[in-house]
Length: 468
Image 1 (cartoon, helix red, strand yellow):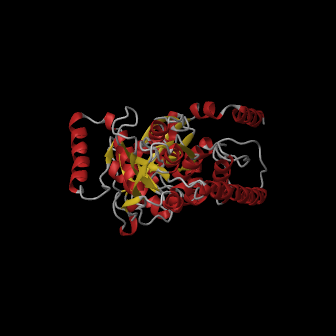
Image 2: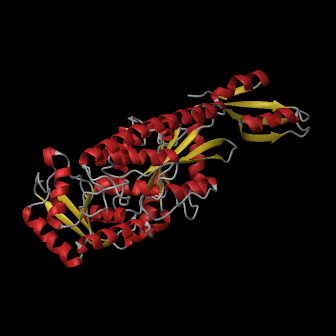
Image 3: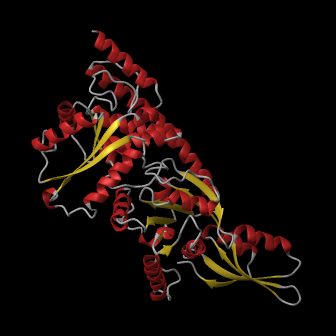
């Protein structure tokens, strides 16, 4: 009885401690159970086993878990009861006891039965990849919408398990995520409370969605092009966002450092204003429930005029990461976005000299082979940290926007300062030349929605190019 009281007191003290302290004090084992041959004739993963286990370890580190060991395990097939074979389960059980492991992270999707059987066999808490990503999102969300979406996805995930993630095999659960206060002990009460909470969240999300709709209508009245940054997590999107907008969005060398979307208005070199949107990073095997939950958050991606696909070209698995991003975009309903995607090869500063030269030549070759096009599809090599290539990137964005805009030649008398001001406020002034007597000759680019007003005011303007 004394032991039970001591155990309960210790658990309550642990719950009162900050999440970071608990995570840092929890010895964690990361297990990567990877099939030697994918089931059902599926194509083999593009990533190496080492790259996959390193990413799983990075996910654990993103919430400050004390990873004492990362263990890749190759499997000929998946066992229905424990995912792993009996011998592997016993081997890991010995390791858990020897290293005093409190949490085992399985880099796969476990069924509720598999999770419970492994917890029983190892005497430690077990979470799978989906649970781990949900925990990260729960820690990162800061806006009301983001918090609600994460909690809803987490409750839907937990509803099938009726367990929480941190209380080490005890039936008494509470809150959501790794931490939570004391909760009811009956499974029926858990199920009822989860459903009631999900219903309340859905009502709250409906209200948030209506508010976002009003914001979109407001933005539509000031129609600036939307440029959304997408890419694999930790590709450097937030650093690039900061470099282009001079903002101070959190940018860390950490998976999922950014979760809630951030949008800023910024001016391009020729004066065009665009809305730049930084979004959550994508990742392989992203839980479908999270894609659905964050669909509203990713509206800027779905509706964007231009997508900057930011890639970390210094990463060994950059090609596989790019394919994962493409897969998530397809799941968002963006089937064919090639005509509005600009591929940004980021982190040029981390490349060795030979690789940097090779990629730079590839980028230039793409521009050269498509020199007859007004806008090349070639990637842009940049370093968001040093600023290398950013001017080429903004020029590419301008060129892509120009596809949907007409250009005109306008002649203004020297005394018509109001007309000149109107052009600078409502169009892009591409070229300006003054005659000896002060007459101005300008080349301007006009957005489609502003073209009627422009033509009404400058009826003598000569059309140079027509929008596609």
